[in-house]
Image (cartoon, rainbow, N blue to C red):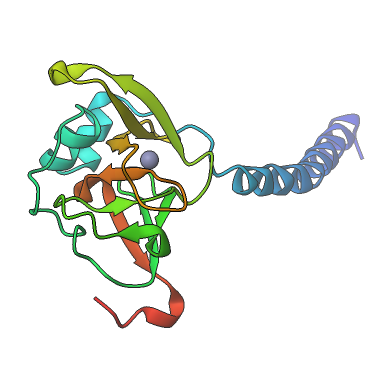
Length: 174
Ligand SMILES: [Zn+2]
């Protein structure tokens, strides 16, 4: 065996050691990724235009509002979770939805404390609190202090920014 052949074998051995050593590290990294669902999702304007429908883009990336009583979820019933239509993050539970009569899906609390981000919005001559998806920064709607108990809050959300996923037990419902 020449020294060249020995060198090749050693290099192969080293490469295998690196690959096998990296596997558990990659696995751990993947698990850590799963465990942090609120990691920011950042996409270019062009990417969002490609992913979203024109109406979703207008509402979610440009802060627009869908016309009242036109969205698919304002009168929607069914057990499940409303996710962000842009990034899939869980935002609201059907148990926290209520009939506000406004023509937009309304909730009295988000699915978790860190699902949403709030910002002051002074557009259109009004002082409102804008609600955004914390994960992808999409505009969702506004929150008002005239909701029902127990929170007294009304999260007024555009249907077009949501994607409903029924719970396993109630998947047959529309
Ligand atoms: Zn999102």
